[in-house]
Length: 171
Image 1: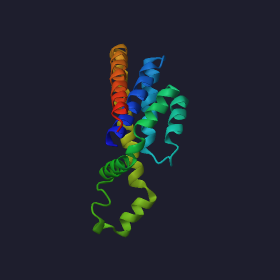
Image 2: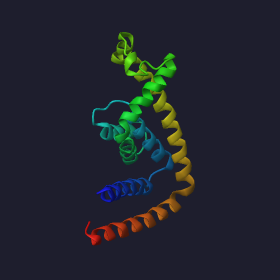
Image 3: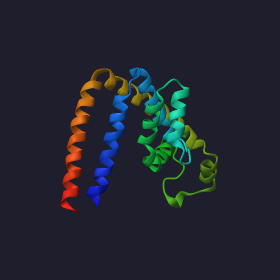
Image 4: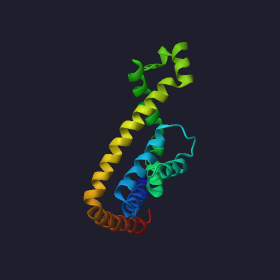
């Protein structure tokens, strides 16, 4: 069962990475679209993050498909991103409002309800992560796009062999 889950995750990763590398658009637009799509995950989108990410990427001059792929990358890490936003917001405002459950005070609850700490952290994190991802993806695509696509094709063939072996074993 764990192997089946791992194979599904691997297939999804290879699929979306291959789609990203196959986009026939300007390197800058692809990097911008992916980064803009990814930073949408730092804000609460109530399940519409992937859809919103593509349209925001397109509205701001990025590639639509790269925005969708970027939006799908961090979707399942929302609890971690929420915590990261709270830490960064606490850094901006001088302290993290809740360090332990015993420290829940009315002031901390007010800060959480209004979302001041969360919003500041989300803005800071999305700016930092967006710029880093944009720069990294621009550099990788500029230099290694063709080699990366060839490597992805080899990885996909290895993955297909693993799936065939798994099916043949009858597990």
